[in-house]
Amino acid sequence: VQLQASGGGLVQPGGSLRLSCEVSGFILDYHGIGWFRQAPGKEREGVLCISSSESITYYDDAVKDRFTISRDNAKNTVYLQMNSLKPEDTAVYYCAKPPGYYCPGSLLEYDYWGRGTLVTVSS
Picture 1 (cartoon, rainbow, N blue to C red):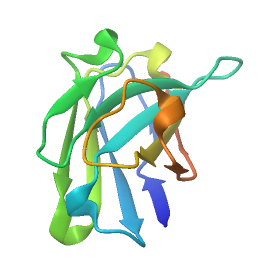
Picture 2: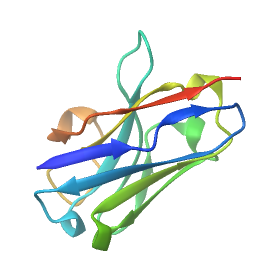
Picture 3: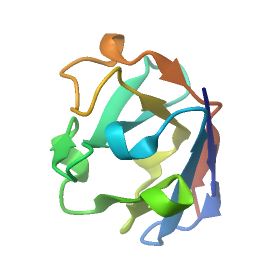
Picture 4: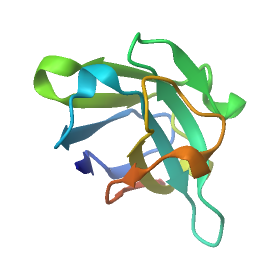
């Protein structure tokens, strides 16, 4: 099982980025995928998750009107679209797979994690 996040970079406040999480070693159709982030000096926190049926769970209400998640099972990829970015969104972003089709309530329930991609929001 592998997950690879990509698409990070430097963006100005108010800008947008789309992150991708490409997966392999399991059938994406049957699994939810979550996005998490870890800012410098802080603990990893959940951002949002998409279930196999495309139900979306927001772990962080602060992103609810700015971030969205989607999936393309044919491409084995889940996307995180981030709009209206703020400096406080600066973090390493990770994608992770839970054991099943649903979005767990805790990051502790995720069983596979990918390497992160750095997002820096700065002018």
